[in-house]
Length: 200
Image (cartoon, rainbow, N blue to C red; front, side, top):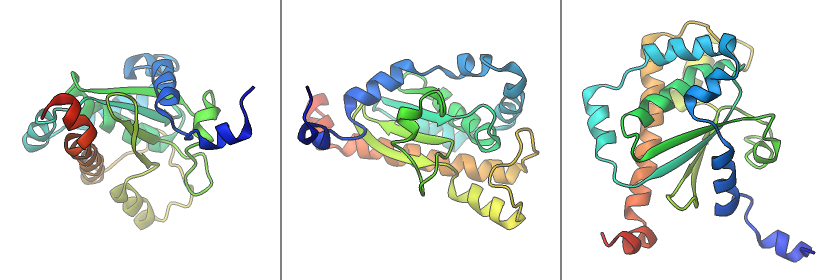
């Protein structure tokens, strides 16, 4: 029997736990295949989102493997507008960046551990090192996305999937996400633990 003291010492997002959740996740295509009708807005944003040459070169320069978990909901407008951006970044360095998508409600044990401002917000992105050690968490909207929503004074916290997204807003959110990918990559690259392991 596990003692309460032992449980209290275990991190909420241990490497073993995150690895198990990563392995339970679905890749982008399989996740969208679960509900083709609700996947349409995701597909439209994926077609609209493009990395520019400088962004592609930046991602191409990454050297550390980055497993990523996204707690999401295919029904969520913010997810439909942001998860395809994550996928575009991952596609630029598929050998090192692997994303797995988990439904927030089906994996409530995870979503309850990564509440933001007391809420089960989506998408919430967990960045990990190659050995599934926790590195960073970002959600549910990037700064540019929050600015755009606030400027429109929409009222609802989550726009409907399929709502049009201005190209400049999409580009800004893509850059925000890319900035976090770069920050995590630099954190991994400069990690003394990983530098010792890789001899670099």
